[in-house]
Length: 89
Image (cartoon, rainbow, N blue to C red; front, top):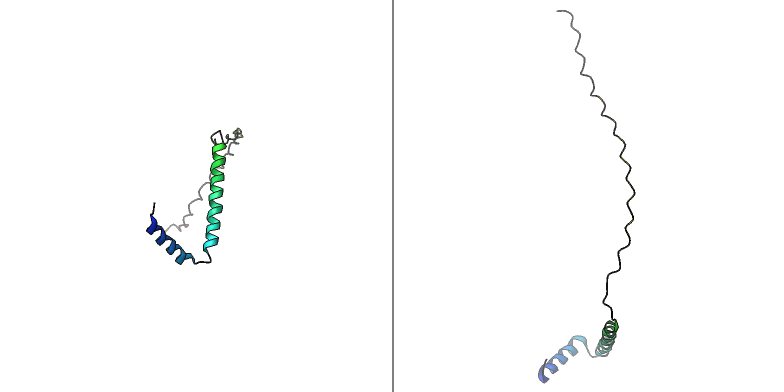
């Protein structure tokens, strides 16, 4: 925890960084944040039951998948090209 001289130096640095006009706004926001934090801690302490994850929704049985229709056989390959006629030579 900073002592007297360190605290004065910190306050001067804050004053230089934020300016005199911003200090009241900064103090007000810090007060609000502290109040909300204390309220949240109080609410957490009042809760007697620890937080538990919500129960998982019931899993519906998956509908049976229809069997895929049989695929048609591949078409036969084209016939080889015809040989040119020969003249008997």
